Structure formats: structure tokens, C-alpha cells
Image (cartoon, rainbow, N blue to C red; front, side, top):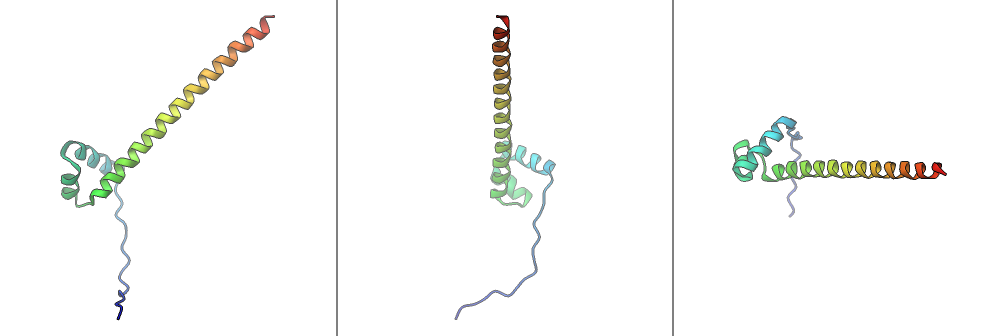
Length: 88
């Protein structure tokens, strides 16, 4: 016979502030993820997820910076081309 679980109270997710996450990530870099997770009473995977998210945010910022630099180069090239065309 298959056992079914009784409905339990709904659990709420724990929300952490950005400041808490920053401090946890800094400590994890210094002391190691396992120790920090144990000290804070959170899962290892949570710290790794925060780290991955921060790295992705940095990647997006870098990609945006490269796109902006490309637009500036294009604008300069267009400006030079227009100056050459109007000389004649």
C-alpha cells in the first residue's frame, strides 16, 4: 500500500538582504563556502547560487560596456566618413 503525506503548513521562503548576501559571499571567499554556510545555517547551494548570480550580473555589465564602446567606434567612423564626403 502506498503512503501519502498529510498536508502540512505552508512553508515560507527565507529572504536575505543584499547586504547579507554580500557579506556571506565575502566571507565565503575568505573562509570557504562550507564553513560560512554552516555558520549561517544556510545551504551550500544557496551561496553558490548567489555567487553565480553575481558573476552573471558582472558578465552582463561587461557585455554592455563592450556594446557601448562598439557604438562609440561606429559613431566616430560615421563622422569621419561624412566629413570626407562633404569635402568635395
